[in-house]
Length: 232
Image (cartoon, rainbow, N blue to C red; front, side):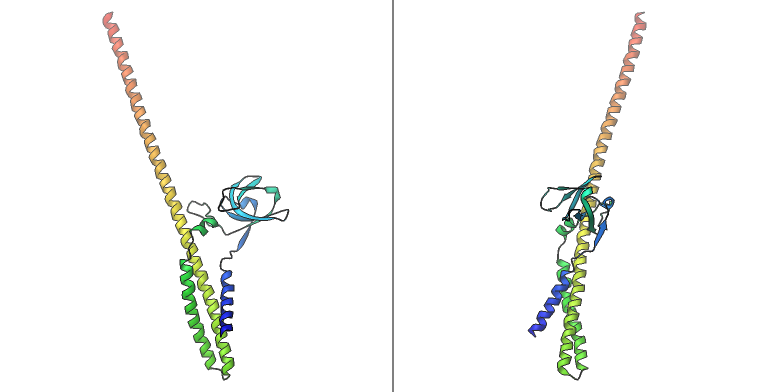
């Protein structure tokens, strides 16, 4: 029995390790965008990964440590290949980096889906295994098949539920970031709008004051003309 549990744990552990593996997409230099998390292989055979901070025609500035602001410069001519996971964008078309997603992403749904899925998968696969066991004349062989069915079914079910939970956590994190960026952009727009309104009001006041001064000058000119006529 202990061996069966050990095999089950190993299968589940092996399956869960591949949940976070994202498919990488080859990129050309022209496709690279700021804030993208990329992996770069150089002509010298070195590999480095990090966040694109700046892109110029002849070099990239790469932030290789999420906990530090320092960057490294990689010349375009030294790059052999580049790859990245599928880009995620906000409402304005800006890239949401994987680091930003990781910082906000929790494990709430992952844990709920994993534990719930493990329970459901165990119950369903054990039931199926039991049915198969009852249909066999060889009790020992039937038990082996039953536990194998239970182990495989539980492993696959746990994996699928865990992956769904992790995807859900990622989706929630991305939507939160999009909402925060939208709110920040909206606040910035409102602030700029208020500034423009104040500037417009100041310009109108200046125009009014200028018009008043022009009118006063014209009045004084007319008064001077009248005074001259009286003197003559």
